[in-house]
Image (cartoon, rainbow, N blue to C red; front, side, top):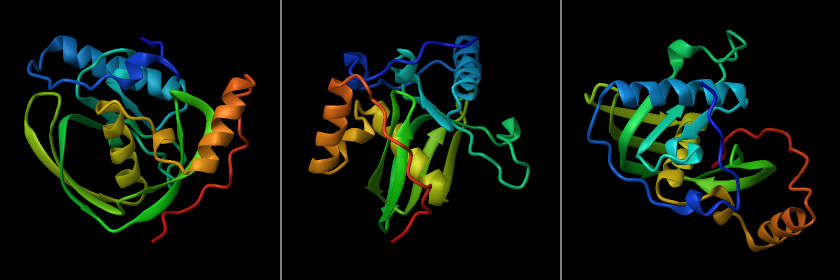
Amino acid sequence: MILDILTYPNKKLYEISTEVTEFDDKLHKLLDDMYDTMIAKNGIGLAAIQVGIAKRILIINLFNEEKQLQDKDELIEIINPKFLELNGECVYQEGCLSVPDFYEDVKRAKDVKISYQDRYGNVCQMQANGLLAIALQHENDHLNGKLFIEKIGFNQKKRFQKEFKQGKKQSKPHNRKNSKT
């Protein structure tokens, strides 16, 4: 089922999500619906709060260049994430389903290590770099009530606010950049 995505300036997006304690059919349905929603909206990541559910749940499904698609077999479901390590620094141009049509460079950790639970409650760990590390940090920010526009510079915020107030909420996407140090 395709769910509605909350968009800026909806105050619910600033709510801090709570831990998941029940790993049941209701959670599995939410994860499945989140996946359908993310794919329908052309996203690569989605946090539960973006669909109005204040639980520490996020999903990521990066585009597989080799297969030229988002392979559902590569879907990562992350529940109750905890960052164990954040190393290095990179800048990547980000966008967000909750801040449509706006893209900006954001500075984040280059490499991350997290622990989390899967849909069945099993504890897992993952190390990531590149776009996956960026997506993990971006989606985890949502769980902490933060949007990527809070991480951009003063001039970029001014441009965003001006575009938002004008009703455009649109910025031409820059060329995708690879993470850089």
